[in-house]
Image (cartoon, rainbow, N blue to C red; front, side):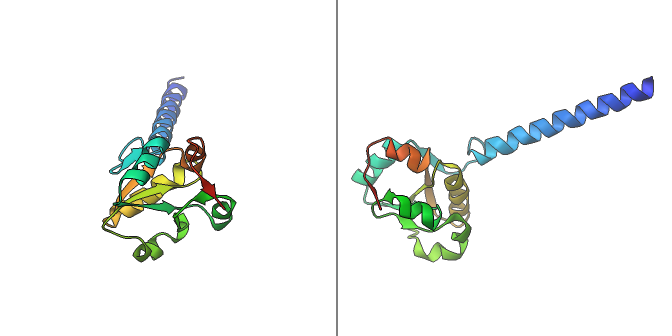
Length: 138
């Protein structure tokens, strides 16, 4: 009986460790923890685009997603091609980064920050941006 109890305690412990790991991974992937870059709401991003000449816009979605609709003057560099195309992005400006819903842009912001850029993640991606009434071009 003691051996079964001990085994069950180990299983419980492993379960809790796995759940904690999963929770930490989720929080990291959402940019809630260990994010050394700024994240802004879609309305803030639009205000920055309208009032700050020191920002540029980066879309990290796929080519088909971009063709469905994107923000005017956005540079498209899909997330999986970002590191090999960093030279296309100005280093002397803030980079407003967006994707579809805000997850890939967090990954892109981490890459940009690691390479010395100043990324600003747009929470909610193009889905959130489209709710602000901003013009989506095709």
